[in-house]
Length: 83
Image (spheres, rainbow, N blue to C red):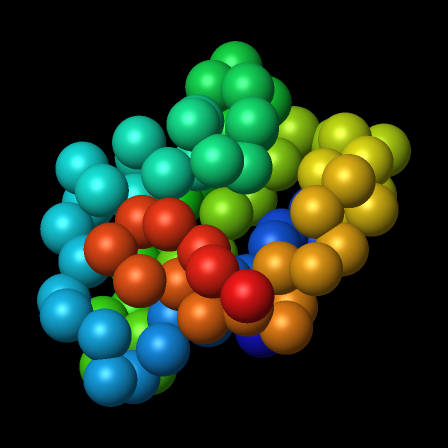
């Protein structure tokens, strides 16, 4: 069983167009302000329309989540989130 520690799961709108890996990388940097050196792994599950981002430490993960608390209530379309 895999442990998902320090991992943020982003769920995309199922009705949105397919998002490329490049779009996700750009979105993580430009919109979410996640530092490249803090990311260990990015996994894309296109069927479930989810992106798993494993970060280097728990504190950075919590800071990221708290800084973008509204992301859980938004639709993510083509690498940008909208209310």
